[in-house]
Image (cartoon, rainbow, N blue to C red; front, side, top):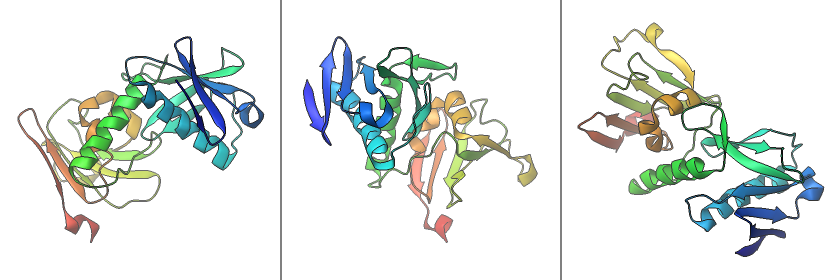
Length: 213
């Protein structure tokens, strides 16, 4: 398995897919361990990072975190001359080697958007989501995504415990919800104007034009 992307070699070696050509840009190469996903999935992750590095010329520090669409990766620096890709653990317990969960999350979000013929609008780990009591506890949720400033994802997610008192709502980071309610993740890349209702018995997703007006 070998390909060239933007003059950067991407190749398979000893359970890892690696780059050759980034050394002069960030001081190291990248590598990612191959897990249960298809080889092309890992290549797409590396291509995403190559684009970021070549387009923005960032200063990369050891163990830096980098957003991968709506998940987050860490450039583990223990294996010079490579940065080894790790990802946030799905339960929020630090970082683990590999990117399998990241691939799964982005795939499922993309598939959900494709069902509704829309382009994904991925939230980021640093953005905020508005939630009510009962969301973290796993109750049925009613969600709507409003046009919002850049620090907000636009999602407002409530349960039957919401009493219409806006002061009772909580502003939380996207990643807190992602760790607490992974069952909601696949819906969160739906663009502004979308709503969903999710319970044990019902899953309903629809677009509401009045949200945008």
